[in-house]
Image (cartoon, rainbow, N blue to C red; front, side, top):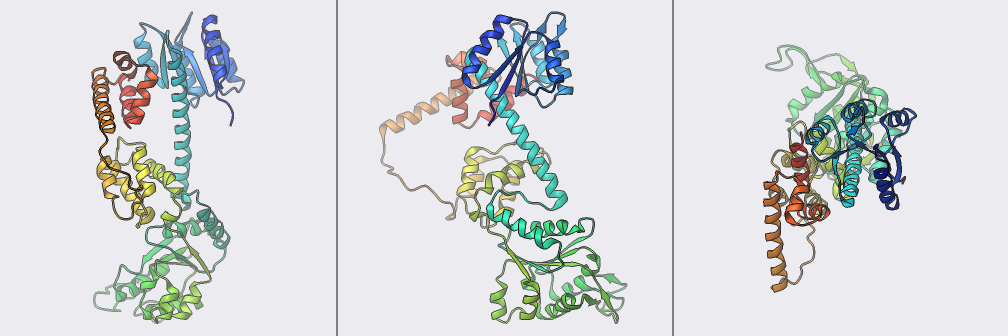
Length: 465
């Protein structure tokens, strides 16, 4: 991994030397410039530092105008503004214009190091969000799905290989694992993305209605049939039809479906002429069809027609490495839609997600995250996951311990004091640290430990706008 590059722009040569001497031993590549012209020339030559430290005041130059120019020409490079005491208005304006952070001279060495680390972390998060947005767009457009699981990657490879053929594909898996997502993936990679994708839930309709839904009907076919109606197979012509929960289909409809698979022909209810259809047929179920065949509940000949290629999607509990990625994905997908204040899940909630077995699989995870974005109650959300399916840590000795009780009480008092001080300083962390008599880094560590750092960051940022 390459080292972060810090470019410092200030007209004070002594200051430049001091900062460079401090940062280089800490693993940073440091370059210094004494004028804005040098900065613009360096960037024009193609340089792309990890972060720029920019003094807001230069002789004959307005640092805010330089910042505005950087935001237009190099918006991906984060900028930390350096200012002297008494330039509060300039700092507020700089933050409003897009500066990542600011430092007031003179500042402590720890403040400088923390500010750079914070900016690099924010930049990394922004890059991750952009990457997830690209995946989100790809999900919507191509039917792709988010996963780092070797099993899912192998499934996608198989799906790509069979997509270009016209053979039926049987997709197996528990409810909520993403069978429809995989079906859309096959549809797109079959070169039919601009053609219809039609899904039929075979378990959602009574058998007599399902027949007319699949094959359509002609006027007068039954009471209430006042006109012709095309079926789902007709609507899916040249595209793909997904027969979801096919294990629930009646034997009568199974026979008609077998005819479509064999000859590519169907007949509307009440019709006399057979119609032809060119639709890619995919089927999905959470049942074991081979067992249904042995029990006489599913036609054996239809089973073998559908079972040319079978893909089984593993449940979420067998691919826990996907949970953090899916969490970020769903937060990104729904946060703006619900105008939620949550843009990152608390670590404690993610940990609870990792311990839970998710009987409803990805769909259940998605719904839990949607609910949390709307009603961000951490304790209530974790409580919904408290079931025998949660892998709790082994029980420990719960005998009373005076030292433990004392430490817990002291920490609770300390937490209340810190929160009160932050509230009094309008969540200005630097000022709060001074009033508490602790260093800035110590305060940040406490906030992170108590899982209220995100709130502090958000409040602090808003206070400078």
